[in-house]
Image 1: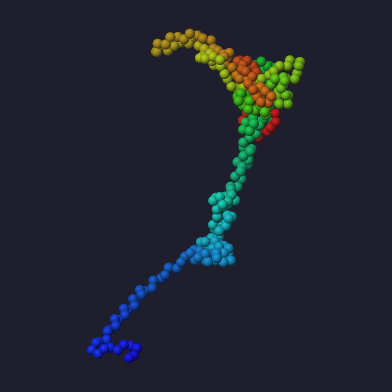
Image 2: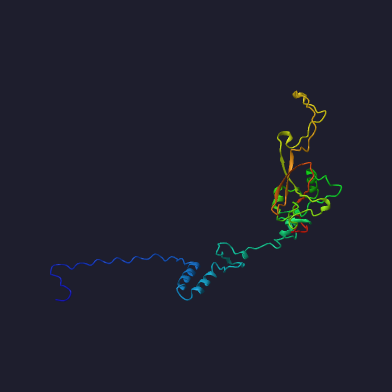
Length: 286
């Protein structure tokens, strides 16, 4: 008997099923090629496992969209951010002469202190009390001092400003204070006495209309007859009440201190404060 089993008599051989025909492939469509960026990324991944990693990375970076990648501003290039996730300072352009306005720097525009004043940062103060002529002596009350400072282009400083500037400005002081830091009278022919300075800070010891002066009621003033108002009683004006006083200060060992108060009509030494101005001569020492 052969290797193939013989068919018994009278039994037909089984018919083999025909193999299904191989499916006919549809017409090949045009395959979409991978993008250049994808190919470059794959190349970078392959080369990253070899010694050519750096070269591959640079090759990929330099070819992104045909634009080079750089950390410096370059025409047509892609600018990378710094470690702080911001553009490098050198990459931000500045306008020509941007640090000047009309040819002047920020310091020049901010201005400096006028002559014979002390620079206190954002403002200035006279380095010495306001000079009085013989004709002005005894006139330097609160109103006169306020007008004198305004005429100089400044203002009468507050008590807080005087006290705050005590370590920079020689304030009036006692005869036992140091002449190196304070303005002390050293002329015995005029009499030696303690001095203090006027401030623009006001206090009062009264209430009501007597607290800050009164314009009074003029002779001949009448009430409104349509409203049935009676005629007011004439009353003299009181522009400088004794109750309205200005605070005075002194050097107090270069620390500053309060020295009481004086009625606004009483004369006292004072100095003026100023804003910085352009073109002024700066004087940083008293």
